[in-house]
Image 1 (cartoon, rainbow, N blue to C red):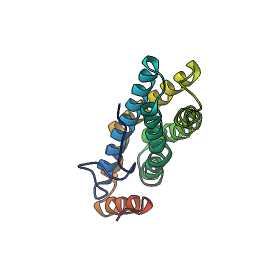
Image 2: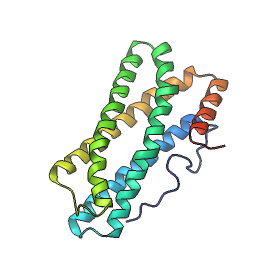
Image 3: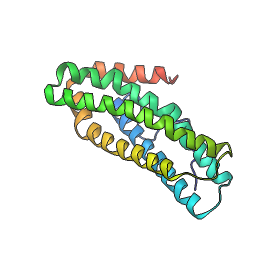
Image 4: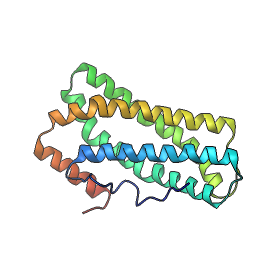
Length: 181
């Protein structure tokens, strides 16, 4: 099991801040990789005792969801959702409100999930309780549905409404918040 990653939320081959919607989708790919790592970690701990490999995987998941995921949500809250609320019509506005609620729920889920991962990463736990396992499942499931809605409906609608100059500004602002050039 490996979970090494570059600085979360900055770079993925083929995606750059010059194409912010591609960058947002690349973030979704990284979310899925981290959720997959979490699943492999859980399976690993069912077959083997907790060791440094497991603790490192927990640290990798923690780092991603503590640093990169909040920046990604902020990108959407600042650049995608307001545009659709203002110009997207009633159905899209309803969907955006649901996605905003998802962000809040995912933050709450993560606040609980991270406690279990932190304890494992620091050697204070050797595995996960059934309640923690259920929380991880809820967290992953919520993300999966959320990503489907964003990539299937929300991003295409926002991109259609956003002019090239505004999209360029969006990418520049996303890069600036991350300290990228």
